[in-house]
Length: 422
Image 1 (cartoon, one colour):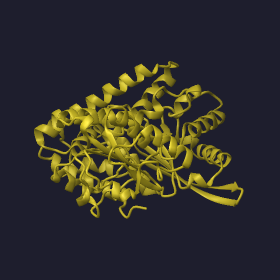
Image 2 (cartoon, one colour):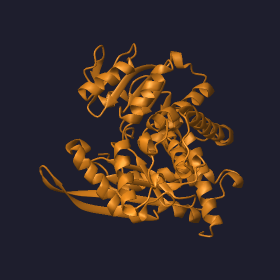
Image 3 (cartoon, helix red, strand yellow):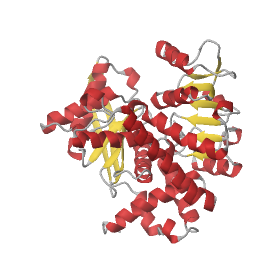
Image 4 (cartoon, helix red, strand yellow):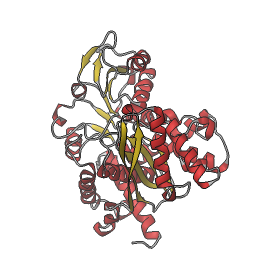
């Protein structure tokens, strides 16, 4: 578990943004310290505890749902199943979701959920019961126009399907828009399963052009090999990058000549880990972060780059596929060092963007083909990148993270003003 409290670290980041943004023209900021306080407090935090009968006896399950801010619309955000889930982590994730949705121009506020378990220790039947009980406890607080959950770390389309089914049983009516990231057969969207990784690739593609870097002459390393990490590694490999290293929770592998990502995925699916991949050297996940590469893609958990290892990072571009992988102190250092950090609330917004498309299809009873979905995703991600670069980063020499926070916060605060709340 990280020694850094993610919520407190984000509060520190908001304060830093306020100081930097006050130097900008009023039309780009104009947010007072008093108004910024609205984003330092969650609207609602729900704590859940319930017993679960397992083959090994009764276990008490701890779970959370945070609805952080709803000025722009119903709250939206994933549910993660992970042993390190706690309230402050979920609060930080919910705030990041609020900022992410605002930045991408989505009609959502920010929410997030979590269940404090190691899903590998539970049977499929037990995971289904946990998922259904989570919805039984929360059904009064979620809905297509209230709060819309989605998958996150160690949650799957199957889990989303169970949750939607339980919600519909309770309400006695079809409500597919209550949850996104579902299987296609029950209202899921084409492209959702790989949208986070692909959205990150679209942002990186634009950054590479701006930095005048050639993908076919660029090395990449991916830290984290779950769904999003696997997808970004795959799309980088397919687009000519030399992916030389990949890490998962059990170790990492390195091949300076490049890894065959399709074969590595097959090896991971067969063995359960990336280590011991033929033709590659086993290394540590920490060592991967120090490799001399053009692109480093952290796609695991938060705070893997901190003051302890920030000076060892050699990558030219860091693509934050995971949430909160860089602490505020490390982020400031890397910016001053000249490292281009593409922040999580921009880089990994592909998942929630396609979740929005799924929600739209559910509300209208429509179904878009994959080409339509990916075209819309490409347009959203590309426009978001260039809006930040052209209006904030280049003219005011800001980091992409600071620019993203400024734009996202201003939109939320304006909505709060227009509602008469502040």
